[in-house]
Length: 411
Image (cartoon, rainbow, N blue to C red):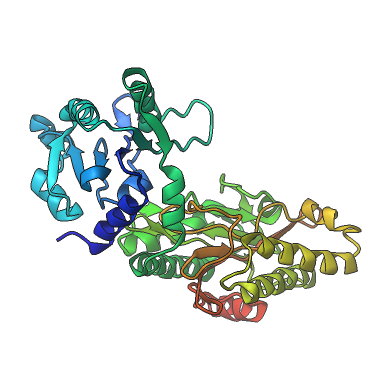
């Protein structure tokens, strides 16, 4: 039986479309890695949000005038079933999505042309998201065809509609994010229990991977960051191939993915289980900054204000240490934002110029990176905005100096 979440999302999408319009969404395809090997497939999240289908080479066709949606799937793949498994069937597609109109990919373009012509369609919505030159998505490719063969049809970007819809999470989504977070916490605890001086970063990371597999998780939210010593000052360090020495801190930024929804937690702890005085001082500055940001989160607060609160805190504290002289100097040691939306994408879509609203889910991830001290610290938790404040979804994960040292002393 189809999950009501996806049916409800289609209704929300239809309510945003203009009359005399159609919308086309593509699931996408896995690119070739080499030879006949492909990268793992990950569905377009807007497509998935309104269908529940996570198979490649599928298309959704929405027609606003009659509030109908058709799902186009691949035909039976015959002998290839023995090599790669069977394509999704019509009945399976109906059961998963709740969409009753199921047709095949090779019928789509003719269906589109006939419907647009017979119904005098004036607007075609497609997902025009493009973050870099050269990334020609199926939607951008099809937009060229529509422009060529239907020049009178106005094309509009449906991405902005999804941005608005996906900012506010349904309980179904929050529950999946919570499950991903809970497994992420187990993985971090396993790494902390097994960390010893002179282990390679990737050896420690392997304990996180093991916990994910043990809990039936097949995909990470993103490539894990395991950064010891000076590597921790590199924001997106991913080599994970250095030796974690006694006296080093090691910074982990990791996340599990549950049914395409993500957790995202960062923790920094001493490889030998004990913080030095300097490490403890910097760590507590970061932790206090996170506390201030979390306390500020509630409906009506500008998203951008969160980062300002953190920078003001850092300026005050780093000035005491003689590291900075002006607020602008803080960017030398803190060079990212404190929050991003979290959901079906780790950096989930949404307008960061908005006021916070109830049921937005976001990260709170202050960091300080002092290269000359070989200290990189990030402490990241995930929160959901509530009616009067916020709830920390990752609150079960320890993070004070005392909690970490006590936990690691039990090894």
